[in-house]
Structures are given as structure tokens and as C-alpha cells.
Image (tube, rainbow over all chains, first blue to last red):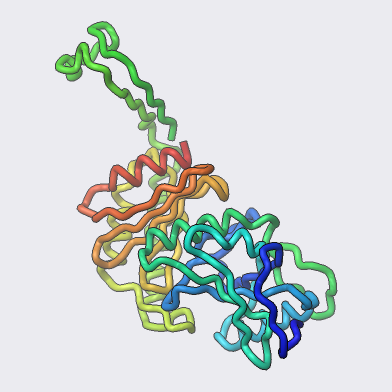
Length: 145
Length: 160
């Protein structure tokens, strides 16, 4: 994980993960739906940086997030930071100390719902690979759907 | 749903349709949409109406997502049902899901860069956004007990 005492700004080529907690946010063809990137209540959206983190650590954070919300972790999808920096959007480091120095936020969502839908659709379309399903703890390989 | 759109100068022999007589000599855009009902459409629509009912029942209380979601109100449920009932029977059916702000989402999807996503609010405002390759139209319209022509147009662009 990133050094707690020195959290660097998010760089454009960094890989970010968005945890999937609802089945309605993914499709059977391996793509994710815009809903996964639609903010609610806040005009920012949580993501987790892969930087300096092992896959196990990233999955562990996902499990913690799911547990905090009383949900089951379904999987995660990865997106480059520069793909999130479209129109009004930007990505900023937003460490949650001491547990998750890798936390970041996609910020700058407009208040209008149609504008949010449009940006969310573009973020979902920018995903380069199929989403990853959560794997059992004993399995070290990447999940498959 | 197959749609053909073309522009031409309307001459007397272009179409044997008396309704078009007043436009003879004008440059017009002609849109021809195949309105043949899709096989199994009504059964699929009935099943989807049940899905809407189930979603609205499941999401009728505040915090239905364990994260403070707003409930889907009766008026939102009614509008979503009516919209589905008014969908022409030659049009693909959407995928339906609840949204944490209490709205209901209808999505028409062909590929990541060919989709229309629409949120239905309890006030009857429909918020929509489409991705058609590099085009990103979006906007809102008010539901007035007919299927909004704007949405029909973009569904045609996504699925046609």
C-alpha cells in the first residue's frame, strides 16, 4: 500500500479500481453499466489506487468496503486515471487513514442528472478489460466470471 | 427495429400517398420505420412489467441499498409502467434497474459506445444520455402520456 506518511498525487497512467457491490451495475458480456460510475448524494465517487498495492490488498479493501455497507463484494473493474479526467472530472488522492491510504475520489460531477448519466456512460465505456469477479481466498489467480 | 432515413425533393411520382400532396416540390426528409411487431414482444413486455413491480416493491423503503438510498415512490412506479406500456411493439425492450436517488433506469444497450440510459423521476422528468460512438447527446424531457419521440429517435440510433 502507499506510504501513509507520503501520499503522492494521482498520476494519469495510474490504474484505479472501482468495487462492484450491486449486480445491476454489470452485464453478462463482461462490461459494466454506467450506474457503476453514477455518484449519489456526493458529487464525487470513490475509487482505489492500485499503486504500491498487491492484488490481495486491493481485494481486501473491497471486502472491507462491502462489509461496512452490509453488502457482498461482487468484483471490481479497473480504469486508468487519465480516462477519468474528462470534461469536468478529475481524480484526487483522498486517503482514508490509517486503513486505506490508496483511496481516491473522482471529483467534479455536475449536479444535473443527464450530465451525470453522460459522464458515467463515458467512464463505463473507457474500461479496457472485462470486470473481475471476486475469487475465493485460497485462489491466487484473477477472478473470471 | 429497422429505420431508413433519406432526403430528397418530393416529386409527384415519388410516393403514391395523397397525404403528401401539399409537400410536392419541397425538399423533404423521409423516415421509414419498420413497424412489424417483434415476435414474443408482448410476452416479454408483460414479464418486464412484472420486473418493474418487483423492483418497486423491493425498493419502496428508504435505505433499500443499505447506503441511504431514497425509496422509489408510487408515482415513479406508475410512470415507469406507463412508459413501458407505451413503448411501440417494434422497439427493443430496455434493461431496468433501480437507482439510489429513487429513480428507475431504463437502458438500451448494444455496445459500450452504443447505448441510451434514461432515468425516470417521480415528477415525470426523464433524464437521458446516449453514447453513439463519439457523439454524446443528452437532455431531459417531460413525460406526457406518450412515449417521448426524442427517446424513440435515440433508441433507433442505438438499436437500429
